[in-house]
Image 1 (cartoon, rainbow, N blue to C red):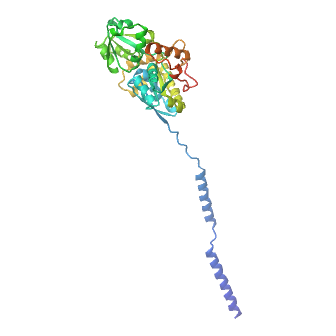
Image 2: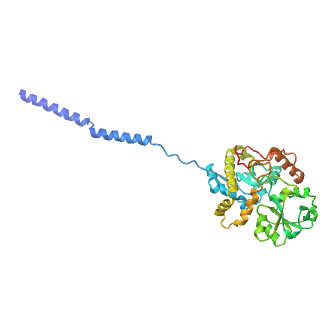
Length: 360
């Protein structure tokens, strides 16, 4: 009996042990290793460095004064060589239809920056368009009376009794009154013929007009390339040596995006510096964007542009002193009827210029 009781107790104890083992399984060494590996992998994923996305480029549009030509090659150099990208900018270069129109578009905020003749910019300011020059490129304007050698026109005064083609609203037409008054031209004796800017050269070489008001940096070169002997009388040599083509921006943009504009100018001036050092290379770059570009004409236009960048007093690019600005603006007051109530510094600002400018 006693042995049966002991056996019963042992059986109960065995059942209890089995029940306890099934209810709380003990982790094996294999289970523990897998858990550690999983935890380690999770830690590695968490600790792995995250890839940094490239900063997004700031998109801006730059509006030219006119159709793209050789004088604009330095901008395409800056674009093609990645100078704008280096400055964090994605720049679109858009062609224009005249300096006056470009000034209006910039004033409206349609584009961030543009390229216009200073006389057109000054006229726009006095008309209430809120723009300013942020970087002068031409220290002297590139406008000219362009005629043919056989015309007998040797000075602005000789235009009396002649027909003159011009495009309303472009830079040469806006500054023309300065030349008229400086040279005592009797305009009642001049036959003005209005035409589109793209028609001026054709009108001259086909004899429709005796002279045109145009650019020494593009139109005069085209006349020569078409086989005619062009005579160029630059406005700057006949009483109107004003600042010429310049980069401009709206007042709002200058206040809100001066740093962006400064980066654009820094990249642009690198393009102009490269073009000075290798003008043939600059034209070759521009030909990538305009395969039908007349290389000889474009090179002539670029040469004329580069020759307009400096005067004897220049030390760097964009080097126009307050005194030179005042002289330039006074010419516009005297000869173009520019409102004298506007102080000189209303028309330009230096706040967007880079600290270092390329040397002359």
